[in-house]
Length: 64
Image 1: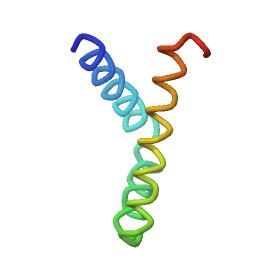
Image 2: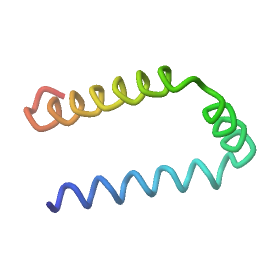
Image 3: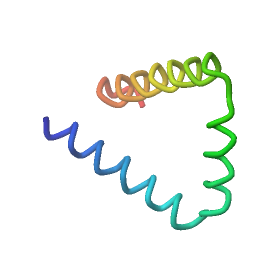
């Protein structure tokens, strides 16, 4: 559970930095994402989740 909250905190920190450093680009990217087809958003979400699980697995197993 400790790792989950650490990862959640890191996610919020990175997201906050992106919103603070690049507000115009972030707003544009969010507007484009809102107009994207549902299938593309689902595919990007699945690929991101798989990539995240792979990164965690690599780090936890000591291969990375």
